Length: 118
Image (cartoon, rainbow, N blue to C red; front, side):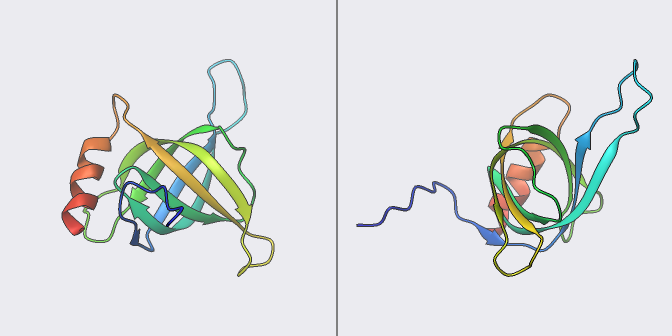
């Protein structure tokens, strides 16, 4: 019996991902911080990326993903579901995002693009 709980097929995908880890506010002089990284795999409801610094589980972050074949990045919102040291890259982390359907994002376009590849 398999312990696999995944509902959606994962696809290996090495695309550029932009993660907004800190949003500049109107009442602060702190600039926006964006991490540029690479995806490892994608699904209709998630994306797994490799990053240099750990991300806090439970964080809700904005993402931009430049999928191969797409003319422009797709803008999404995702929750960090897990973050673990990457055993293949010392000092790096693998992070799993669950994508959240949200107004003003490209969530539906993402779902259509990823599911059409399956």
